[in-house]
Length: 227
Image (cartoon, rainbow, N blue to C red):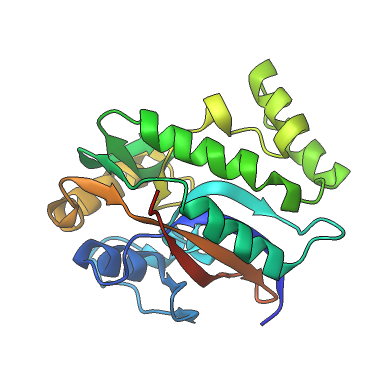
């Protein structure tokens, strides 16, 4: 399979009950590379609610999507990811909660995120040699959101505004919603997903994923954090 971009994700363990529900909720399974049926929930158009995040799969971004730099190869990226994972220990947090981030819903970590933020920063920094510079059109689109100086500096250095000190770990569960829909969907997820969430919440591995020609992200490999 040919990939146009790569990214480093935290991808929840496929065998976990909460992963299975949330994967069906989004409607795309990165592990199998297949669409899956949404849960049937009265009063909620799950397909519409999840249309925007669906192609990315169930994940939290650790290093945002990037094109391979000239002179770099997939084999080199794969080896670097494997090496990086041997230098980092698993991260344990108190749990996850369903939170509003502006007008969309996501899972956010509960507890001290110092180690988690350091892991994400390491992904961005230590694998950056594999990232081709973002095209000007992409930079202009990012700036159109109205970046603060810290985010602008990140965009220039790392190709993405919301990394390093601006990083906020989140597992996206919806696109932008109007207020009535936002409340209804949040209530649904608190009823259906919240009881399944892990306590504590552990990150034991990182995933290299690729964006295929179909526009969806596919699992390539998981790397156990063994540092």
